Length: 314
Image (cartoon, helix red, strand yellow):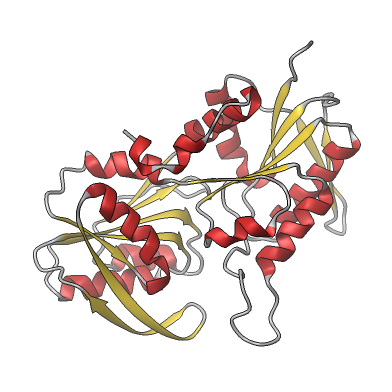
């Protein structure tokens, strides 16, 4: 029986990452053309046969919303071209912050996006560091939820920091920061923040001791960088020796980069789920090898559970 062929394709927004993933997997990125009409409407087209193949379509769904819709159109095209299985690879899953009704008369955007992906024809979702774990339950297809800790932890271990303390920039991120603290056998502090509206922190309080410590603030997303920079300022005021930030998804909206470079942060460690240029303060680690390995394991029917466990990092 012939082995199912694998094709890796990419939307426009994530081609920079998809090319690295395809190289790590050991094959060329598939050919896709995109026709754009004068009114802004666009139409993707696969320029090679995909009948009976396993497809990995890579696209992070950061702004603009066209990135999400391009992914949906590519999934629909693949389904109509008789692909065997369609894996929607979303290194950054947009709208994940809308995972519940936090006030009356608002949508649950993450659920809507999951429904759209299923309706388009996705057979499997592969993503990284969702804003909240429960989003996996919004899907009726398998979700492989990867963690960037497998690339961040080795970097931290080689950084030569002798007095590490992990910090969560808010109470919602405590579980994530605690997992790093447990694995690295170090202390944990929490920054308790209060907001009057989205993207604006009114007040922040520190819970825990940071005197003489090298602080690493852990989060899944850096958006405006307001929270991260305010937390960095707070821990330095409380006597920290140095402060760094670690986040999987560098959204960096508005004047986030300017804030970071003016802040007390020594270094900001991010992944390449969203494109960003390295600077003297921003260090980018690639997720390409991790995703390529997951593709290979899925194709061969092998377990990928090792990618969910801190203890298998080393």
